[in-house]
Length: 156
Image (cartoon, rainbow, N blue to C red; front, side, top):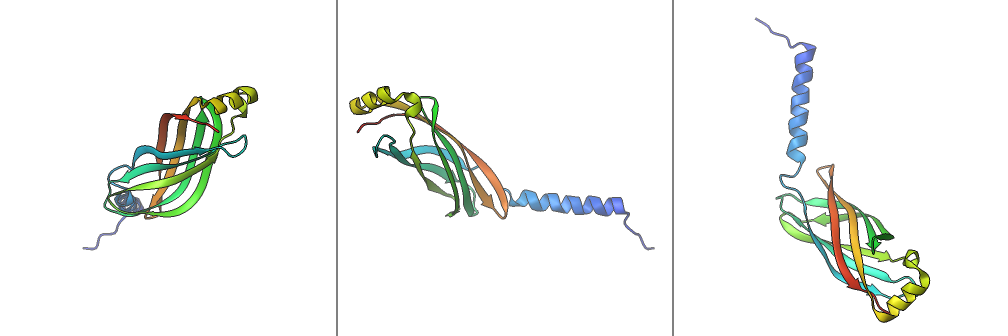
């Protein structure tokens, strides 16, 4: 006796196989944001340049690629810089990795005279990093949120 599949059951079977394939490509565990370190602020004219490294951990047993950095830098709660980079950085399996961040800080919203006085005196500023990095694994992209806050002295 010959049985034939109906189009509905074959559609269901294709959908089930596709779903299983996609789910097997996603990481078992999320990438972990560990913080921002090695922060250096150098005065270059009126707009200091901030360089730092954002640290992450890949707990999965598969390699990934870092595709994009999309981080806003806020100084005392005001947007001071935007870091937008497209990369193709390889992320090893089951390891820590770092992402370089470079941003030219715009302190003009804080007031020019106050900013100059505070920079000469070495005032501490609250610096926030808010955004995400995008990684890919087997063609699927994943957003990893970045949210970090610290106080940093900026001085000429």
